[in-house]
Length: 186
Image (cartoon, rainbow, N blue to C red; front, side, top):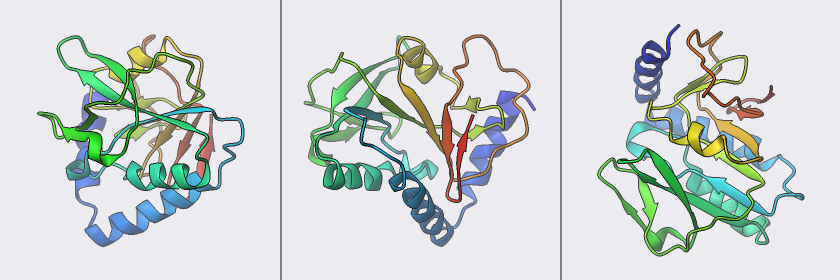
């Protein structure tokens, strides 16, 4: 299947998830995430969810990290839609966040971070059994990931699809994808 078709289908499927099922799936995702070993992680980049699109609720993961691994520096993205590039900012808490025109939470005062990143938690609409993902189609994360040497983990409420047919040289493969029932290594 091609990315454009996958994108439409995956978004439709995610939006069809009931609130109760979303809570159950989120709890499973949280349990899979928190069972990982974070002992070697110093800096974690994590996306902030678009709740209206039923993206995985990373706020619960951020809360868990700050409570159980306070030594980990949390970095969150801010998108520039004119250049399709992201900047990384230190996470100061929900009080520093504001939604942009696309309903994406973004930091307002967090210092720009340009240091090393050990782990990147990546948003996606769908992923395949080879570790490739389909996002919203702007390429923000592919451009960001091509310049860093960090572990790349996707989060998905839904299972893998068989194959993305139009993967290209700019697509960055995930190392893992966490679902509510499993952590898949690629």
